[in-house]
Image 1: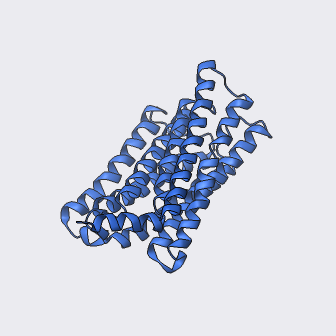
Image 2 (image 1 turned 45 degrees about the horizontal axis):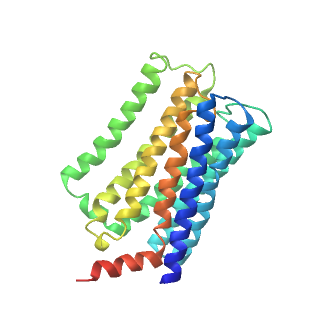
Image 3 (image 1 turned 120 degrees about the vertical axis):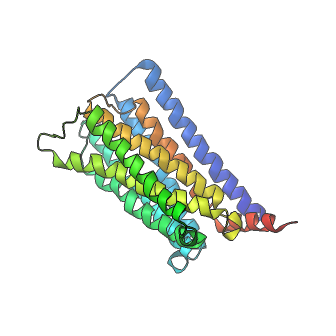
Length: 281
């Protein structure tokens, strides 16, 4: 187990190192107050490494679980595919910035990659839902009520801030219905994944010895950060105050740092170590 532990520690250190570079790059942008420069666009390009690289590592972990032949393998596979698709979307976004010289390509082809994170992640979380036996816990009325109220409150909050505060109650896009759709779909997609992850986390304490509680809480917090990022992106593009490298963009690499750490912990070799430790008297 020493070799696998070494790999997991190394990959985690590399991930945190990349994230540190991203933060330092952003601080350089922030303190100099620059906008719409090559350095701004390179910032977005650099943090694409996080979802792309750890999406691939997630694919490897899924294979170690048996791939599509096991529920955990499917869960890790779809979650990894989700963040990998987002990374592809961010590469396309950077292409618009650096090659086509479009400062804020929204909506654009990049959104095809960004949007895929929601259905793929929802499918992945649904498999974890089955693994943890969360469906049994949802038989209580209080659990069902919470499952209904939490996403409803988040959606209402998003609607209020995006349509009442940012637009003064005016739902008009000058014919840009795609932006209208995406501004609604992004927070709704986030809410669905957050709700599923929250339910899985709550019931992962009771099933499988709480084996997945740490990776699931990291993924949950990651998607909450992604929700904040998506909301702020929609808000600032609506108020025409967004630029690449704005403080809003810090939430994206943070989200994928946490999700990637969670996927990294889904390595079955490490899961075996945690299981053995739980069984010790």
